[in-house]
Image 1 (cartoon, one colour):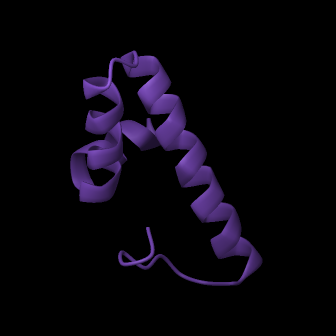
Image 2 (cartoon, rainbow, N blue to C red; image 1 turned 135 degrees about the vertical axis):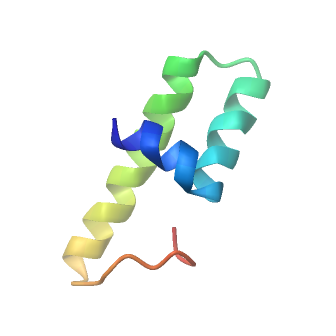
Length: 57
C-alpha cells in the first residue's frame, strides 16, 4: 500500500514505476522494485538517524 501511495504522490517513484512498466515489466514487478527501493531508503534513514528528505529519495 505504501508503494501505491508513493507512486501517486512522489514523482521519483512514479518515474521508476512507469519506466519499468513501459519497458515491458509487469505491474507487480514494478511495484516490488519500488518497494525494495523504498525499504532501502528507509533502512539508510534509520541507520543514519535522518528524516525524510525529498531530494535524497
